[in-house]
Amino acid sequence: MRHVNYTLKPAVINSASPRDKAYSLTDGGGLHIEVLPSGSKVWRYKYHLDGKREKVTIGAYPAFSIKAARDRHEEMRAMVERNESPARQKQVDGAERRSVEARAVTFKMFAEQWIDETLFYRSAGYRAQIIRWLQAYVYPEIGDLALGNVQPAHVLSIIEKRLDTTVAAERIRVIIQQIYNHAIRKLIVTSNPATPLRGVVTRAPVEHHRHLNEKELTAFWRGIDLQGAHATTIAASKLLVLTMARKVELLRSTWAEFDLDSGVWDVPGPRMKMKKPHRVFLSTQAVSILTTVHALTGHGDYVFPSIFRGGVPMSDVTLNHFFKRIDFGVPEFSPHGTRGTAATLLREHGFGRDVVELLLAHSEKNQVVAAYTHAEHVGERKRAMQFLADYIDQLAAP
Image 1 (cartoon, helix red, strand yellow):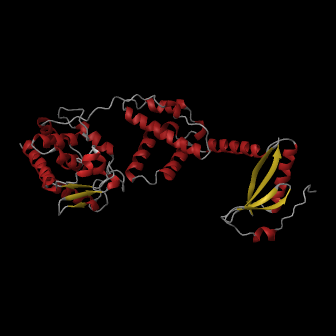
Image 2 (spheres, one colour):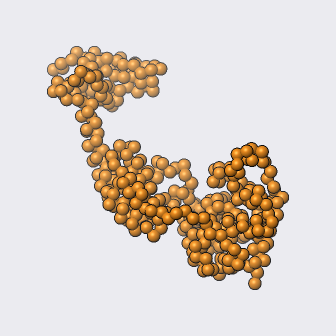
Image 3 (cartoon, one colour):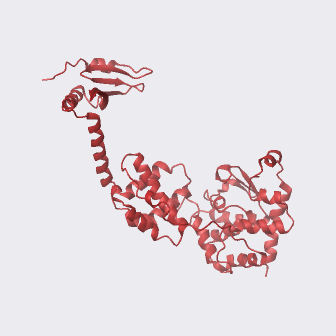
């Protein structure tokens, strides 16, 4: 026998229309249906306990029928009579359910879900890099562990094996931390095993990238061809110097950005560090290299696609490793150093600071100067890029 005189009928509930604000249809004994502006109808129970008013959600109608909602209401009323809180009990039950889910979901399963749900707006190359790190360094260690069973010691073990490259080690720790932050937001776990390890990786002080003098540049340019690599890797290495572009700008470039007949490359703002479009004037040598590359990759979108995975650009580390293999007497030279090398050479041969700064796509730091300076120096920029290519050819000639 029911202890409450319930009043709601199916016809009343079904005919209730949504309004601008939520409103309630009372059933009895604190049980009611709340009609939301969206049109959804939800069973809720209001009660007093220890002098305080509490409310707990039972479920949505019609998934929770009138009979099911009233049965659950009777159970909750009995809890209140025993001075127990249905709302707090629901929280406890939810925590236990999430704990069970965390034990059922492996780290790899949730990491793949994290990639789909949070990295969809990032470039294909960025996602590919994250996936490579996870597959190479993380999944072999904790991929099959339940999400809720991963401990800081597991993460520390992963980090310690990468301490020879501290930047990569810290990046991997941050990726794991981001995955667990997402799991916490979804209420699957309550703690993050990567957070306590913040600061474990001691990164070396940031140093300016080494640039080359003319003798070293000569040896480097000759070494590019002598080292041996895929044709697109060699082409990208040379174009880093000849365009003065950043590595990520070049490797993510698409053929749609180039007009080889006019000798220009227009880099869209979203791919630039300063988020402003940048035009690169191409020397005849740069156009020649790109024409050769087009015969190899012009059927696709990316100028420098990965030779291992279709549909994604060449990995950043490809050029890093190639530069390390070139034995020309400067082992610490990196792809980013090509910008400083080209800029220094142009300044030493009489090209003005404003011109070189435009070639590097640097923004004017002085806001007053920036507000009144709009010169693009197109003629000088074209002359500088052609001089750079011609001078390198002269240096590297037998």
